[in-house]
Image: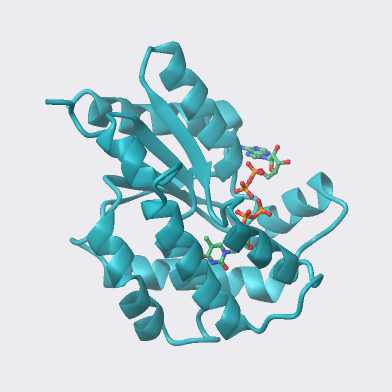
Length: 209
Ligand code: ADP
Ligand code: TYD
């Protein structure tokens, strides 16, 4: 029987280096002949596009509507029969996702309560719980420095107050799920290579289990 792939999630505040590290890890795994599917949330499905349009103010949407849309996007991301994550995992591929439900725990509080987001996402946890969640931790200052350097357009979440709250919310959520979710913190205030090496040392033993 085909062995199910592992599901690895990257989390962190904006600019923490998630996309960079997801890409580096995927390339290294492929170079070692692992079968890998790289993905992200919000996705590029119609629901994900709607979310991005709201983030950039092209379509009106309040925080509660957004919270519900992220959940819908995630359910589709898990279950879609064409390109859903379960399909790849069951086909033996490892799946690496830039963000998953801890992003909802971190970004939607206090607009909705943590209890609500956790309860709403229970269906996702039951369908697909990550084998490993890598949290790349950087300071709020580093986050803003990196974001202003890299882009011309900042989305409506990208300011000091908001990012500090998000970082605090992540830690609260990790405490709540201690012993339930496999979260590993990585210090992201270091070079690309140092961060990548720590991630490799975490992930490679997991994939050969
Ligand atoms: P995220 O996906 O978490 O928002 P990115 O990987 O897009 O983060 O990185 C945000 C910015 O920070 C990019 O310009 C990237 O080149 C830079 N960056 C990422 N990791 C590091 C690092 N370890 N040191 C310095 N700059 C970094
Ligand atoms: P992302 O595409 O990772 O950001 P970037 O544009 O920096 O690459 O995510 C877009 C935004 O969506 C980001 O600010 C975090 C937010 N988000 C939520 O609010 N809730 C969620 O459930 C997810 C997955 C993301």
